[in-house]
Length: 158
Image: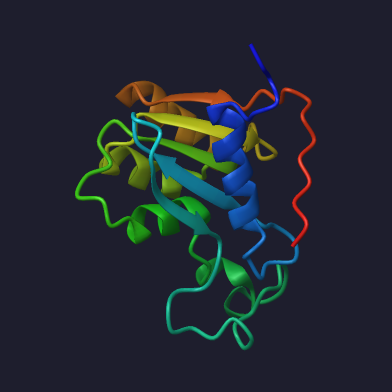
């Protein structure tokens, strides 16, 4: 059998990575791709400001006075993907995300009916937010797994 094609995991994680490139956040670009059990893309998202908030004037800093940093304003990629979905239901879907979801996004993932999370990085592993997220996922039966790279390097010339 030929292996010069992408697996579903490669394909959807690649789309999540491409979506992350839309983010204006210079420090943490995150993308998400929600997929049905039939491998159909239901929605995409990246971390960015709410609709109507001008990315060019909103704060993107990580440090400083709270109102002068991004944390009170940015919508995370997973939440954006959930909110952007035109699908009538996300029940049974899976989400590919470039960063393990925070506890707040985890609540939305659980509430939306998504049943599996495939993540690229877990760089905040062990933090309170990460521990809380995994606790909720374990309690509700939402599975999560680290994306396993096949070593394929894909270059897209834009």
